Image (cartoon, rainbow, N blue to C red; front, side, top):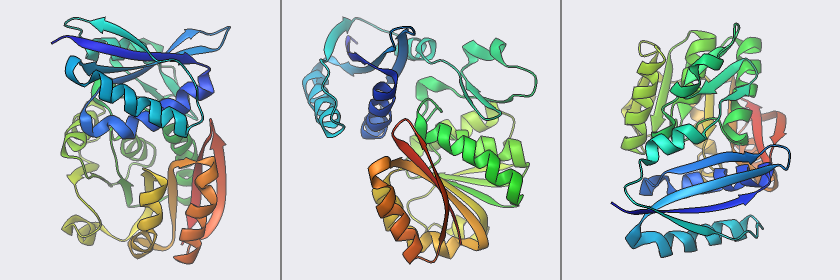
Length: 291
């Protein structure tokens, strides 16, 4: 089927902010999204989204709305791509990412792994969250610090997406990890990535909407919960988080814009958590809280 590539170029920080906002907005539609470095010296990056012919106009309108919300004013261009292999194209465009000791990469970059890396291979063409913007990268960096300091024994990756954080937990801590998502397609992708990285015995992937699913009653309380979703849902579930974390346990929260941090922290303080620290990366924050 003929597809159209909708694309725009901007600086790295703006491109990553746009990518991070577009990814959750279009994940339910299953539309492939990619970010590519065009010119390192001039700091030019390109963000592309691929749409079928019949939906190009509506998709472009949604992209413009999201960019406007981010105060980004960039022209969106169109390129018709008959019978494009978008999975291959997306994989070729994604560069590996380093976050602390973690090295997140696609199959095409296996040869770039170095001694001492905690390598996580993600099938990027289908992934929801591949480590390529400040939310996942920030979580990975903070996760390494918290796990080293606290040695958790039982962890939850809430809204797992590609399972990159669940895989990271299983690799660095060698502990059982529950990885849940509301999207069954995402959970299929997560399970495939878990198997690809050899941690199926430690990571359980489950489709679960809310904390009412029986798996939470069976697996709680958790020493550590990592949730890289969105600020709104994180605020709503603050009381549920408190009911599922051990006394003295930790939360690592991301998917939160700089300007949204005060509201998220306030919700968790009200739910009985203590704010430990916040890190900032490319306009996004990662928050560490303790119960």
